[in-house]
Image (cartoon, rainbow, N blue to C red; front, side, top):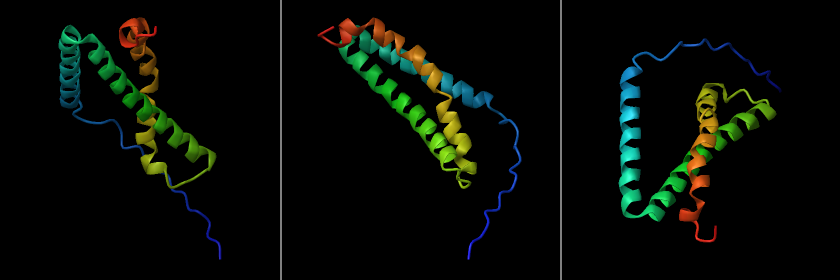
Length: 116
């Protein structure tokens, strides 16, 4: 009693409307984060870099988990993941930025780790 999987075409809903408000909020949060890092760097640079590395690895793991989820579903040829695949692909889109965000850590290893 086997049933063939029925795959239907999902139409693209188009681009997201009214994204300017969301971008404004996101940029304001980025500015607040940069200011908080600068203030912490003045008072305790080692703690500031530890916080930066923790946030960096959090974002890196989110991107890698999205890539793992998408690749696992492609390898297993599953059909159920189609509605949530775009979310996982959006998480993966952050990975190229991690190359840029690791550079400050690489140039300040002497502050972060005592043995370097």
